[in-house]
Image (cartoon, rainbow, N blue to C red; front, side, top):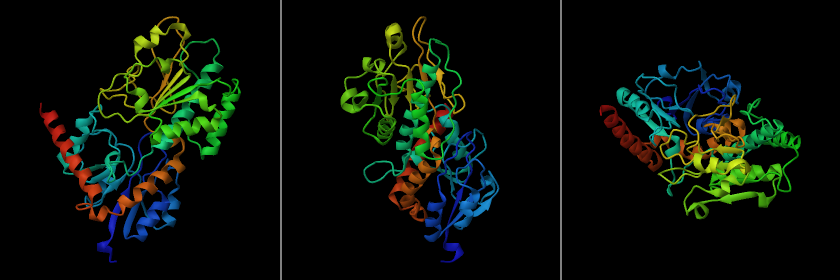
Length: 381
């Protein structure tokens, strides 16, 4: 294959703080190179994979955040959204853009492509023949979200009768799943363990990838099966708010939100439960914080690894309630999450040279054009 026939692809660095995952791993990059791709990788000290790991499999290394100087014919792949800017975008970008569901600032993101003539292939909307996402971090998001919730619960218990804001808790990525599980177990053991009904959790969206991850973590930590409430569409069909959420220690929200639904909890139900409410931590893994249909309308800020919780205004005399709303939870297990995601994405990436005819890319571009038109019209009103 001549150089001119090879498909270029540029892995950019991630600018979001604490983000250590990668859309392309060295393993996947090698498979793409063997299939006729030329892979360029930006140096990135934050990434879980060392630059040398990419260089060893044949990638070309370039300076950090240098993609704006790349030829516009070279697609740029990353994970999280680009930094906020008004600069036009002229490249083809493959990433999670978080702008197709009317999130805060959605139109401003899309109109950058309009002004620059670029294209967005949103990773969230690359789907297979059955409409299912070809690659997702859902399992590891649920797994990490459940772990973070248990760490928050342990931190709260260590505060004893102090009902103030949760203090002294931060999150850092783990090198592997075993270390995460061991750490969570150790933190909980300090406050009495989890078995025998000591900790009870409810997972909504339990049958999906994200929910399965949360349930798996709870099992590995040692929760009794009867203390893991697994809800999905049948259990939520009656519509919220749900008293059952208030009767567990931890609520993990793992749904995929696509339209307006009744809220799962509200300020009124939380305050109405009074001092006997058991619920202590909400892990909103779905993280629809700025979505107008957010089914957990008791907080309005994203949280971070260094400040992972925000307190709910529960009313005087009521026990505290903390919410975790981190939009990149899988980076708590960056290597494993990246390997799984990149491997799942590989079959679609192999079709990138045929993106004008390959269904997965054609449909993603059609959706982009539809959302772009909506954004332009919105900005003009």
